[in-house]
Length: 265
Image (cartoon, rainbow, N blue to C red):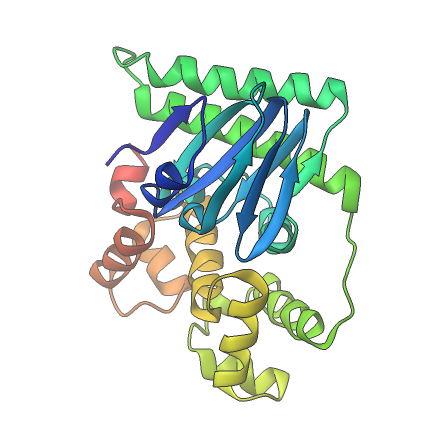
């Protein structure tokens, strides 16, 4: 399975084939009507968008002059490429609710260049550090999206009951609770709700169940720490409460598709 795919078109059939990928796009011209997670969206020139679950994207109609650049990134590869910031978690949750951002011309030009660079890297298959090259290119794109989103929304917090519960859940994760607690019951107890209610609310609000976010925070933190050569794999296993290095290895491979030792090569 390819980790990164570049396209200059979008269709419902294409989206359905990209299950497991995140869609990152920029409308260059024209207009398109798209439905994502049951919500109807209209894309215009210089609109950027991220569909956290590509298979939920349905293309209703496009004008004759519609032009788009699309980069599909496998979810596990996004985890590896995510910069050392938890902003992507909050931003990702907000983007599930409102996946379109209208960019200024300078921002659109910058994102266009980042998407074009990914296309260039995809075809540089003879590069001796091909995988790292792709990771770097995807991270550059992610940082652009972070910058655009943060400039538009900052730390805006929605105060609906569901959003407040979601924010409380994310705050527990950002405090590092996942290092010692990866069971859903701990978080529901802390938030004074049932595990079922928490999981259903988180899925409705973010598109993924609560366990997904617990594992995502854990995997991101492990991948960060693996970049520090002074921390041994055994120390990492102890830090996260794994019973053995092999248990840690299985967890990381399940979440990121690669062993910790391979990530350090």
